[in-house]
Image (tube, rainbow, N blue to C red; front, side, top):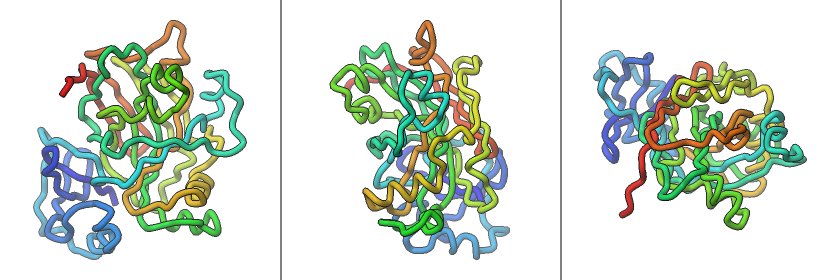
Length: 284
């Protein structure tokens, strides 16, 4: 089942996607796809409902929102692709590298990416994202960790390299700018989805920059979820970005950082695609 949210910012409704062009409104069954509803069995309630009589929504002209509302946290894994570690000159880590993004930087799959004021080093990063379905802490095994996973979606882990690397070396500072995590378009909950064999790509203005496969991960999904649960509690709706492959702007010569007015297209296998335009951020 492909689940997500459709509607204007702040007024999204929960849906089940039937294909790329159509969704079914399930707001009669659940209030939203959120930590609270997932904790109360939202997925099971929708799976048990007969959706044939529910309102159908054409996605033409509709905004698709982030597929989960108000995640408690966005956990990120750094340097998790062998060839990406090589392009940055980094030694592949012996344990997962963890950093965080502010949850409110998560936006819809086609929402704009804002370039921060004065930024000349805003970068793109296609990533497979894990979405948690139940509470998890101190998982005793990888199998137990995977039982807590709701499904998978796409994240565009936008990064500002000047703040990430040159302003004191704390990765969080370059990762949490507003709009820096387009996500969606849906969460794939089907157990047959194989997270370790998915093609993932990112292009800028039609030029393919990243083209790889999740089989290049250093730490696979099951190990990541188990590991993260040892150092923080995970809740339904929490997102784990699993790292990006080679081809980021920072690794290019000359550098391929994003500028205002560009289009960033991101895709992963059967998870659909994101398409964002880069715009100048407005000061409040």
